Length: 314
Image (cartoon, rainbow, N blue to C red; front, side, top):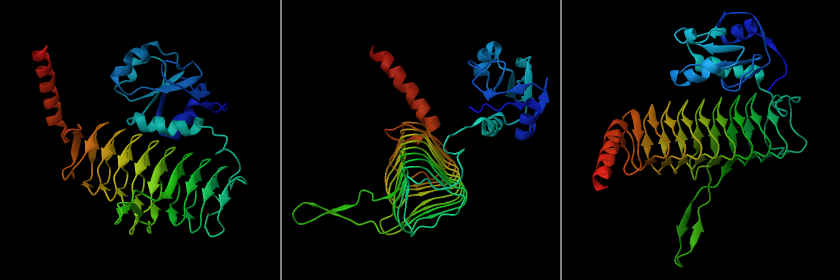
């Protein structure tokens, strides 16, 4: 956390909230349970009401409806979760990010790649030939970007991620041996994408793998060759997307989900964690389950039935 203190009035202005209380100095941001009188926290759900009643936080970000549950200093705003996200900007501190902008001398960067002056590349990164990276993007240490990859503006790629590797492409020969299919396509990543640690994004076989604007990937997500991930879609850790699958815009794919190859998932689909998708989804909505996938409301009914059957068998 940053050691620089901020007046509550400054934080309120920064996140677009109104101040209710004293204009004290805040040194850091903590959870309700661990906050001290020099910290700010946030509250947006009644399930944390007990923690709110016990918190020692110097201030809490909350909405008008829930502000009555806290008698101390408050920053009041409608969208608490977004305000919390903005407030973390003030207290974030990374040794790498806070360094002078530029390219680490411990990174390998091909002379045949194009990087603007304000791109930051951490130690241990490898950037091969014919890579293009947009303005304001950050590559944390030990990121590998293989040849013929395009990364947009203001992207963040966390440590250990590999972009542009070959996918699972093989054909059996007359001796029943696997013959490698060379991957001739590219990876194209649009603007404002954030990719977590140890993700793998395969290049296309003939066409390109495309990650659209504002996509957010958690750690250890795998995107296979020729996939297309729609604008503003977010994926939890360990999600795996099979080759040539297209995922629409504004989707939410839970952690540990598996999505088979050659599927099409429409816009605004929410898939619960640990679900397996084996067929295309044509209708927006919430889906859960693994055997088989079905609309979430149907899955909840089926789950209730499973429990009743289990009780009868005891």
